[in-house]
Image 1: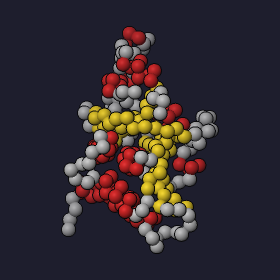
Image 2: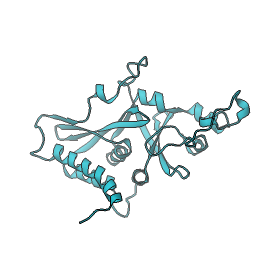
Image 3: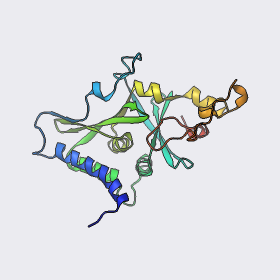
Image 4: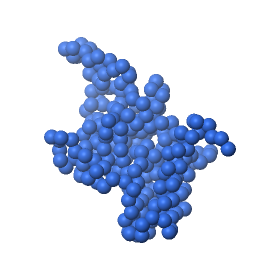
Length: 244
C-alpha cells in the first residue's frame, strides 16, 4: 500500500512516539530498573547562557493554559500560557492539528474523530501509565524544547516531546505544566509589555506610534510572525486578544 508524501510527514512523528512508548512501557521491553529515560538529563535539557543567571535552568515555574488564538495572516496558532499569578504570558506557536487538539480539551469536548494526540493519550492510558508533568526546558535557535514525564506503577519514564504535543497530554491527565526560568526570561511577555502595546506604544518590529521613538525600528521582513513553533513573541496587534 502506497502512502502519499503528506500523509507520511503526518504519520512519521506519531509513529516514532508510539514506538518509543511501546519500547519503554510495554512489559518485557526495555531495562528493568525503576527509572528508565529516553530524554536528556536536567543538566543537558537546559543550558544556562554565558554570563546569565546560573540558576535559571533549575528554577521551575508552573503555567496554566489560557487560550488558543488563531493567527490568520501568519497561518498558524498561538497557545497562550500564563504563570499562575497572571504576571507573565508565554505564547507558543503551534500547527493546526495541535491547536485543534488543545482547543477541544480546553472546551472539555471530544472531536468527531480521534486526533493523533487522542491516540497517543489512549496508548498511555491502556498501558497503565499516566502523565505527571510536562516541562518546557529551553529555547534554542528560537525553538522550544521539552520533555514529558510519565509513571507506570513504580516505573518512571521521561521522553523528549514537542511542547505542542505534551501540552495536550497534560490537559488530558491534569498534569502540571512547568517551564524553566530561563525560557520565561527569554520569551515571556509581562502584563506591562502587553498593556504598553495595547496603548499604541512602541511594539515589536516597529509597530506603534513612530512619534514616540527617536528613530523608528525597521519592519521585520517576516511581518513579526514566525512559522509554527518558532520565535516565541506575539505580534502587537494580537495582544488585545489575550485575557489575563
